[in-house]
Length: 137
Image 1 (cartoon, one colour):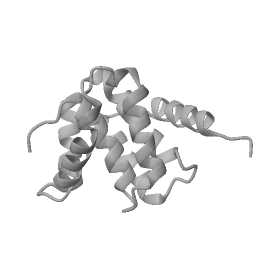
Image 2 (cartoon, rainbow, N blue to C red):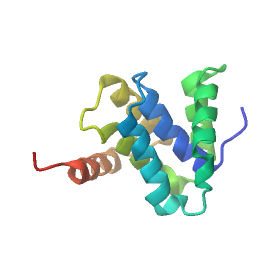
Image 3 (spheres, rainbow, N blue to C red):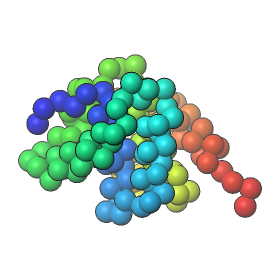
Image 4 (cartoon, rainbow, N blue to C red):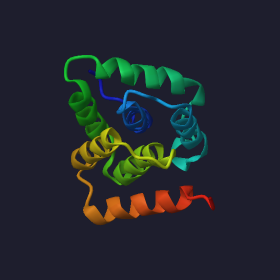
């Protein structure tokens, strides 16, 4: 399994999070597209490649090594300074529907462990996402 680029690694984490409950909802897919279009980390990414990268991730999940192999490659591909950004992107996808399923929670735990993120960073990212996504009703 070749190492993904940092952009691909970020997208892989969002795809893994969305697919964790075996149901990639339209809301989650739209959030992945929104993140790729709007976050500064993706400003030099060719947005036309998003579907191709997502499909490559799904294919790798079914190969030898599965989820653990993909996560290990992602951790190796991401520079240290992007690890919190990567977790934030994954959390964004999990939280977008305001209903975090147990499978999503478990994948986020695996991502935290693989990226070696501290508890305070994880809590801050989660709190910020929840505050940003909250509605009046």
